[in-house]
Length: 145
Image 1 (cartoon, rainbow, N blue to C red):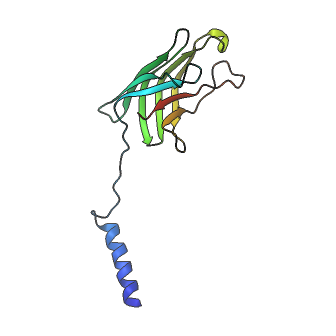
Image 2: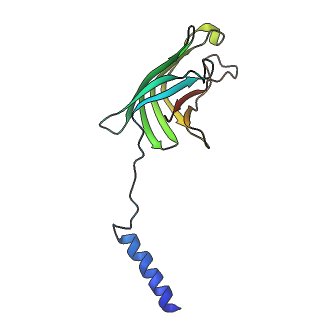
């Protein structure tokens, strides 16, 4: 029994110090190219598009929009991938829907968070409150595809 215990302890110690067995730090990545982009007030069935491009510093640029005849949402800025489920966005998001915020553009500029929860196939903006307030929320989503 002591032999097995000594052998297990030796294996654990060697695996911890051996580069071949040490855990590697993996930096999550984001697929470059076109992704669907939606604001629920406009439509989930007719998504807009955003373009995502990797920069040399490891962040990604994001730019795109969804529009219909009277409404829109736009996004422009950078994304930092924290994990496959979490993105940090820095930039500007603008939206307009006639019956919300008295028909005025809602502009958010700063740093915001997108999360993918559960089995969702998109990241949703977590700072959801529309400029109108009054518990009006915008579901702004960037899809994996």
